[in-house]
Image (cartoon, rainbow, N blue to C red):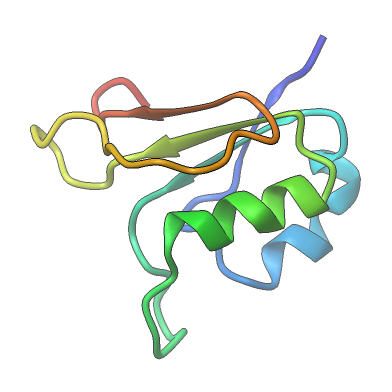
Length: 88
């Protein structure tokens, strides 16, 4: 059964570093841009990097308390959902 692999803010290099752990599991990341990246890191990029690392599902958690789940659209290659900070 797939497990949830929490990758925090989902920095660009973490998907390759933790690929063995991601493979066949569900990735969960926050909506926050990782510190030190110098550019916004959109949910689509976090989603795509997760899928390329072998994720079978994707959870995108809002990093702001009380703001509710993030909304938006992506092409669902794998099942995906946005959740609130409180739910995450």
